[in-house]
Image (cartoon, rainbow, N blue to C red; front, side):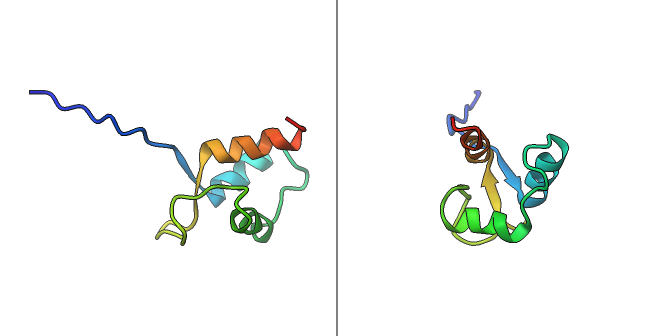
Length: 75
């Protein structure tokens, strides 16, 4: 018998990965500080898994990060 998991999982990213992508892809020069990124979490711009940091820190949904990046271009 084969079981399937129909739950859709949204990829999550740690803030350190977001910082690395912003630097590597040169999305914002210089990249925002950790405090500025936390502000984006607090104001709801970056959607997180949970209302408090996990044992890995804040986990930001990848799709909300890329939506924010697209918004920087006015899209």
